[in-house]
Image (cartoon, rainbow, N blue to C red; front, side, top):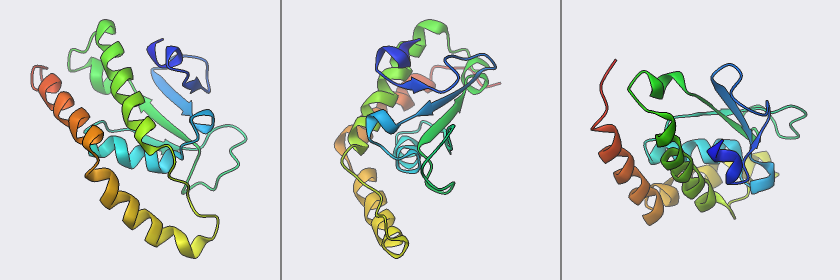
Length: 140
């Protein structure tokens, strides 16, 4: 699996049911932040808790993505290398942003994070690459 080659920790070990649950703890990235950054890059996933997650449900340690959304549009196994690369690039951009431990500081932090991440050159570049790629895919 391309994501495991990039050191992503899959909670289930694979895609047994066409869903991937990815624990981002080893990447030192919060799942909620990664989910927002990926959305800015036109990659839609969900923030998601992982087994024994030390983080609260609103700010979980993981993300979840489903493969049916892309396979119904004609994405092939070979394309997953490109998608894994995009995910890795965007998650890497999120490294260094740490969710404040004090609840009252999280709102202002998230507002600033969203402003910065949406203007990040790498996120914008990935977004453009995703748009070019998806423009060639069929609609279900």
